[in-house]
Amino acid sequence: MTTSDTIQARFELLLARLLTASQERYGARLVSLAVFGSVGRGTPRIDSDVDLLIVADELPRGRLPRVAEFRDVEIAMAFALAQARASGLTADLSPVIKTPAEVLQGSLLFLDMVEDARLLYDRANFMRQALSSFKARLDRLGARRIWRGNAWIWDLKPDYKPGEVFEL
Image (tube, rainbow, N blue to C red; front, side, top):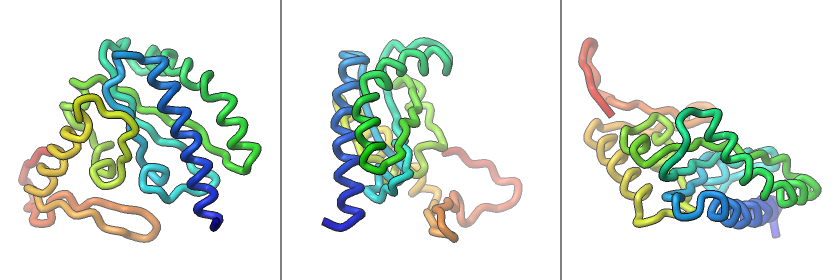
């Protein structure tokens, strides 16, 4: 097994536990759980964070109450994260928590998710459909994802003319 395979296998263990912990915390309110970034792409490094999007019904208003609610997931993940650290990973959880209505409003966060999100849970294909719709809007604009240096950038409207207004 290569080093990248070993790293990926360690992250797979974390993701399995993350799914269980999220389902236990959010229960029937959980709509979607997606990982993105290097872990979602399947190219994590030992120092990669686990970037995740949690979509749930009936969330408290505001970022801080949502993070406080997510704390139960972090507590449930503590042992798995400690094991990961003992094996050389320095992974932390980096959650974004949204309601379905907020997802449907769109977000620049979804730019890279249309290409790299990995859906661990997706009730009624909610997030798959939301990302597909967002991708269709990008396609209509002619948007292109370009590798520049060591990161992806987006040219959202290659034929943009000064003063033109467009929406994602």
